[in-house]
Image: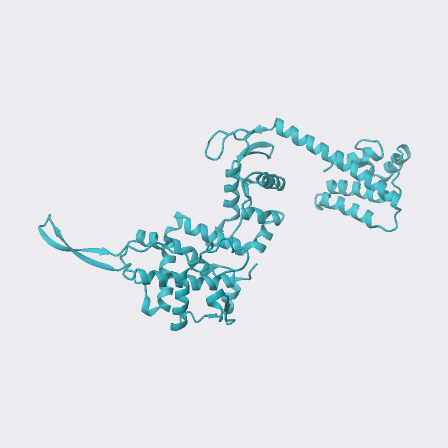
Length: 424
């Protein structure tokens, strides 16, 4: 950034890098002004030009006072343009000078960048799977980071981005800065912009969390404040698919069934305590995201709706697989001891998973109106629910059958409401 005042000095006074010493000594400033006449008449704008010089050189002298030179520069230009006491001709002359300085400054920046691209050493020549890649390939991006050139494929970049922004701790979103995996240092903001527009120009879609991150000016705090409900839902999906969360998912399944049984005394799902865990996981793995949303979603409306949906799904499962999870004994002849014995078995067979939402039931007309997209078994559970007074914590409107518009009681527990937060 110190290059800009040098360019400005050259255009105005014709000297090179003498303003730094001149600004520190008033006597030198008087001698300098008498020897070097201003080449461009800026009149009353000389105050703003002097302020630009002072801003840069003061920032270099005083380490305790850090000034954002880029913001200060444009702030001074804005003040100059809005000052009603300055002649229009002088203002245009000043803006022309500033634009010329900026053009030269950006040209030098571009030259420095091209030099770095050509002379920087190569930090890697393979992707994250150790496959050799070339800088000239269509889906390969070259990034200058910490004076070293790194090559990344588009797929590797998307994985790095998602892993960082969707990081969570027990489903509580904790986005991390996007780092270079080769040196474990965060990418600069200019690197992030380059990555974003590289993906944008490609045939791939920009990952949704990265799009939100871009809209937040790459601010992690703003991303968390504006899009935490979305991040929470993505964490829920990742948790259900993560094999490392196997024991947690088993616990979620038991809690889900226990909560269902408390509200459905006559239609309980009874799982034997010795029932094999792998069979339980294979059967209810796809139910976990719906249950987690009903418990951990930050959207109150979504949380209430998924409470209803998970109960409908489990009720439908119980009706079609009433013996699932139960233990039975089968008489078998044991040839080793030459006598019959009872062998313990479990009912592990069940019907396939049924989604409660039929999103493309009317694909041709779904863009025209909001239609009922619930599966038939959800409609049946709604009738059962109204007859048996289940789920009394949810109040259904009269047109629920047709449009499934749900309104909810306002007597939500205060602590629970604060935990869920607001809907973005």
